[in-house]
Image (cartoon, rainbow, N blue to C red; front, side):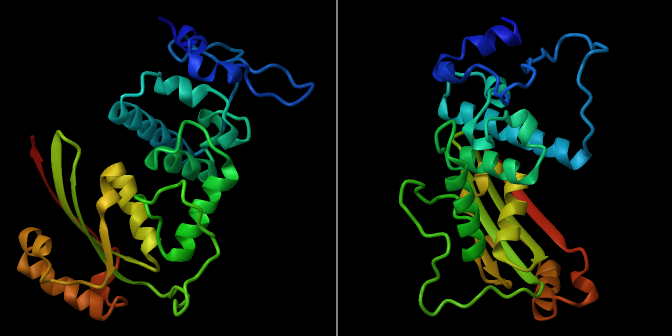
Length: 254
């Protein structure tokens, strides 16, 4: 089955199969990536970071479809127009950071296969307000993106040490991990963990500072590193903190 045949057979989104286009614009044609290049192919000028965003969303799409047993082609999802991206496809839109965030949130939180971009952006805004995105929250429960509970203080903006522990099992593999790096807010750490671990970081426990007595820390982090992290926590502007990005993982099959 060719890519274009698979695209045409996506009955789940049959009403949205026609490529999105502005009134009066030239119809957009979806090209088969397995065909040879042609002189008439559109030239897209972009950056390595932008291409990495598309790859990230494509990877998360495939992982989610496999994890949830979705019987549709991830490539078709990437190429079909979506309301989430203002009628553009993920392949085109996710070169941009905002669209990339929408794509990974849609799949990371399993919010259907399309969504209102305003609702997804509200989740991002709420995560920034609260100091991090809650990947385990129920997206059907309404939350005000600007709500701050009484007594809450605005997030501090100076760099400081954050650490995180992760224990995750997908039925095939158990992952135990420890992370430490310098950031200005918890959301930065959540983003770093998501880039490295995908949905496995949903159960991550992120804290400001360093607790050498935590059981997983004692199991994974060497005493010398514990001493270093204690010094960094006390003075995040010290030379020891420069460029700190520590990740320790162990994995068990079955």
